[in-house]
Length: 215
Image (tube, rainbow, N blue to C red):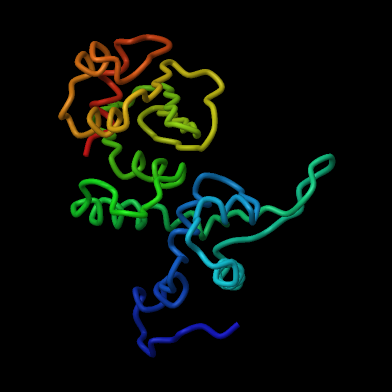
């Protein structure tokens, strides 16, 4: 499949040839959470045309950034996943996400908030210095999806779905509750007393959560 070439011997130009097309980086963002079926990717990118999704997946495969495999029995179907080369894009996506977040206040009309976009927000706001090399697991419930956060020796792992053994479950009960905690506009004590979040586990860890994930 033909790709756009910039005609420059430059690492950035070469990178843009592989992931600079519209939607490509968001597909990579979604696959950072683990293998996904085509329908999972379609649901996580509700505005993408199906022909563009198919084209971008093919281009990512040809560039060696993603691969597909058949699920073993008894599961059926095919999943797409990043290669090690593709996962090397994570620091670049985090840096771009932090840069882009400077212009964000509230969602614009028609903008979707997806599990994948929320998962990315935790990657971009994570402050490893606040973790101080510790180990802790969080499960964050937002409407109809759940994000798991595992910090192990200061290293963050993010996924979509329940946490197998969370130290603290944070359930959002008010629309802006998690954002207010992460921005510092509400203290953990205020969020709990106002009933904007419901906790399961050690409530003292909510302060640690707010310190580690900060806009």
